[in-house]
Length: 577
Image (tube, rainbow, N blue to C red; front, side, top):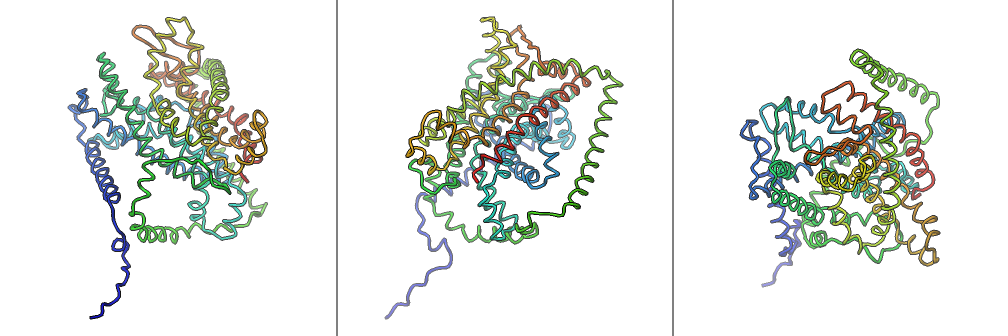
C-alpha cells in the first residue's frame, strides 16, 4: 500500500521540535506571573491600623524584596511611556518644545520630598479604603526619579537623528507610527537603556524614602526593603540592617543579570556600523532565550498584532510632509501660542506673588537667592570633578565589552545603593576629621548625582560604530589626539544628557545632603538645600515655595545659558549624520 506524502502543518507549534530549553522558558514565565500576582495581592488589602506595623522577621524579607521590586518595575514602565510621549512631543513640535523642555528642567530639579506628603494625601483620598493609595504614592515618588533623564536621553536621540535615516523614512513614506518604532526608537535604544538602568538605580533612594511616610500626623509603612531597613535602624538592630543591605545587593545583582544585561546585549544590534565588532556585549540569559523556539511559535500572533497597530497608526499620517511651511501661517500660530502661554504663566505668577506678598512679603526671596549661590557653586564643582573622573572611566568601560560585563554589576550596585544610608557614617567622619559640611556636602551630593555622567559616558562609548574605532586604530590615532578628534565628539551628545541630569540630580540631592545627622549631632551647611529642608520640616509654606521657586530659577538659568547651547552644538556638529 502506497503512503500519502506528509503535508507540512501550517501550525508552527506542530512543526517545531520542542526541547528542554523551551519548557524551562515556559516554566520560568509561569512562575514569574505567579509570583507577581501573589505579591500584587498585598497591594489591595484594607487600609486598617493593623497593616501599619512592619514585621522585621528576616523570613519576611524575600516578600518585602518582591514588593519593592514590583514598585520599581511599575515605575520604570510608567517612566518609559512618559518618555516616549513627552520626548516625542517636545522633539516634533517647535512650539511645545519651548514649554516642555524648560518644564522638564524644572521638574527634574524640584525636590520630590518637598511635595511627597501632598501627593500621598491626594492618592489616599482617591483610594481611601485600600493600601493601593500608598502604593501609588510610592510609585509616583520613584517615577519622578526615573523619568527625567530617560526623557532627556530619548529627546536628544530624536533631535539628532542621522540625516540618512530621516531621508530613508521619507522616501519610503513610512507612517509616523512605523517611523517611531522602526527608526526613532532603535536609534535611541542604547542611550535609553543605559539611562533606564541609571534611573532604576537612582529610584532606590526614593523607594527608601517613600516606604515610610507621614500623612496627617500619622505614620504608615509599606512592606519593602527600604522600610525594613528603616525599622531596623530605629530599633538599633545592626544585624537586620546588614540583612536589608544584603537583600538590596542581591536584588541589584539579580536585576542586572536577568534584565539589564540582556537588554544591553540585545541593544547591540542597534549600533550604526558597517563592520561587525570583534567583541560584543553578551548575556547568558539572552543566549538562553535565543535558543528557545517560542519566538518562532508566537511569530504569527506577533505579526497579526503589529499589523493591527500598523494599520491603526495610519491615523497619524505618513512621513512625507514638506520641510517648508507657510511663513505667514507659522508666525500667526506662534503669536497665538505665545500669547496663550504668557497669559497662563502670568496668571500663575501673579497668584504666587500675591500669596507670598500677603503671607511673608516679597523679601522672602532674598535669603534663598543668596543661599542658592552657595549651592550653585557646589553643583558646578561636583559636575566638573565628576566629568574629569568618570568620563575616562566610562569610555574605558563602554569601549570594552569584556570589561563592561565585569564592571556593569559593580557600577549598578554603587549607583543603586541608597546614598542616605551613608549619611550618618559621613556625619561621623566629618566630626572626627573636622571637615566642614559646607565642603563635605559636595561629596554627599555626588553620591547620587555623579552616576548620571558615568552611565551616559558608557552608553556613548558603546554606541560608537566599530568601523570608526578600527579606523582610528589603523591610522594610529592615540592619546590626546584620539580623544580630541574622535572620542569627545562621539560621546559628546551623551555627555550633555548626563551632565544636565547630573546637575539636576545634584540640586535635588542638596535637600538631604546639606543637613545630616548622627546620634545627637546635626551638621547644617549654608545653602538652598538646607533652607528648603528646614522650611519643609517647619511647615513654613511661604519659605518652601520661595525656596523651590529660586531653585527652579537657578536650574532653568543654568540650563538655558550653558546646557542648552551645548545641546545645540551636539545637534549641529556631533550627531551621527
